[in-house]
Length: 458
Figure 1 (tube, rainbow, N blue to C red):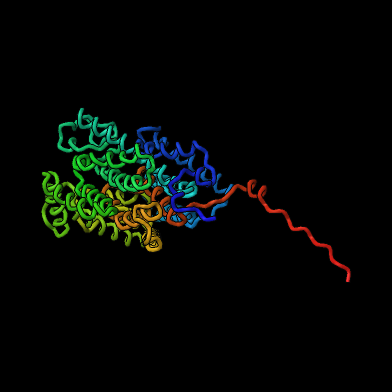
Figure 2 (cartoon, rainbow, N blue to C red):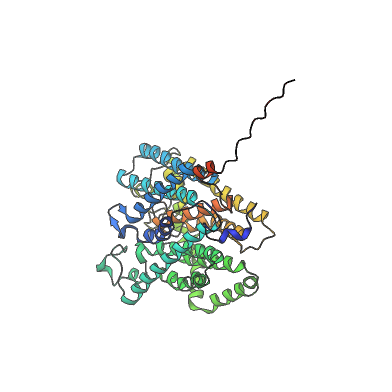
């Protein structure tokens, strides 16, 4: 008996999937909020988010030992994580960047792929995808509450990138929430908007469904207050993709959005800033503190550092150190952070790791396209297709999305986003889940052995 497509959005137990302890679901819902808190909740490098990742990974390891899943997504995430550790240790021994920062980043990357493998293993149906989306929803609400406090009081959290005695400087007007830097807040809002679109399509609780839209309403203004032109531009692209899912959105919504952007002063300033950023790629002058031209020069400087390291890499967290201690041919106005996951991975972990991640991204996009082709007769907003559609959007957008914040690999919410997309890939692999019973139940349901018929004498 095959499961109906409607079953994918029913609760896991109702769909007769493998049982998952109830506390695991609550733990998954709380994890995004712990990722947003980051170092604010914890002692030193031991944050509550990292403790949560360790608990989730151990739970997933027990689940794997019990059910012995054979998921390609699981082994892919595990393999990429191990490859990162090996290439990181090799580049660390070869280039010798500061060891404290290097081991700290290696731990962050290990936690990123440990969480990704864990979420893939704990996947049951689209209901598990919805559970994580709800966690992102609650996290977005908490972040926006912090932003409201920043706007009303003019205060900032202790981890803000400017010290308290710089309160009267222009940079103090930008908000950062719990993330320290405004650009990191912008990156989180773009990631959250993508997950909100998935949650909107999968949510079966009508009281909660509109919360995914409501939490996105203040995001454009908050993004504008971060002064991130790229972040606000990517958010508009996410909204366009969200509207394109529905026929009314394609006919009316996108046109209304374009009129709104042109009509609002903030929208016109975004277009002007975007034009200035594009012009900076060709050497144009701009008053922005960090331009697209600087980002392009960081990319070229990263290629130079990679070649100088004999294509092995300058080591984990070694890009800023190499930019400050070695001469590079391209001017970046004093910016030494990579501002791109591509630069971060290639220059620090070597060309082999860059090729592996690129192939994984291409494979993810191809996988999503194949799922969309096989389900062409089903509505796009349905669970079998909507996750594949947004996975394809992430695969295409990720190179630009990873450029919003100064760093990517050592950020808690970035690790959560990678793990969330990995779970989407597991959903694409088998949307109805793996209906496996525990060994004890399987043994109890074995059919009786056939009785041997006595042979007749000839």
